[in-house]
Length: 200
Image (cartoon, rainbow, N blue to C red):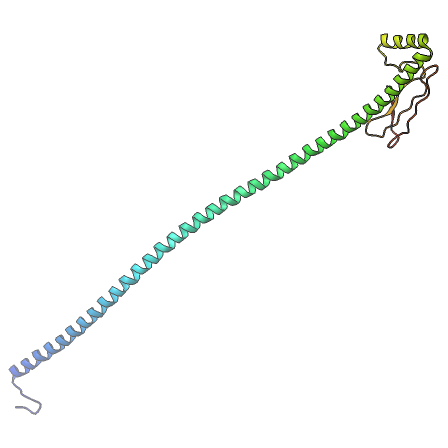
């Protein structure tokens, strides 16, 4: 036997085979351990991936829901804008209509005032003519009949007699300058601002 062991080739070969088997067994064990660790990591990665897919699906659903809400809100906002614009148009239309009606109202008030003054004047004139009929029946009756035949009103169409009325809306005033031979003058006080005289 040598200093460092047997020099027998057979013994040395056996030792080399045993050492090789030991190394391979160790490598096998390490490989098995690494595989188990990799399988564990892969299982964990699978769970994480599944979890990520689930989170993504939830995010997609949330986005779709938010998009639906946003679309509904935009539609509602568009309706509100259209309603606002329509209300502005309605205000303008109603304001114009109100102004037109208000002007028409003022015109009708002026016409009524004008006709009232005219009627008051003619009533007074007719009363004067009736009085004349009692004092000078023949002369006054002939004048009245002539007026009626020519289409003139009693107390109008005679020289010196007439109804002066300011233009409607500009102030009203009316005077009778003369009612005939014996009729008394009739001059109620003017009302409102002086207007342009119009003879009827």
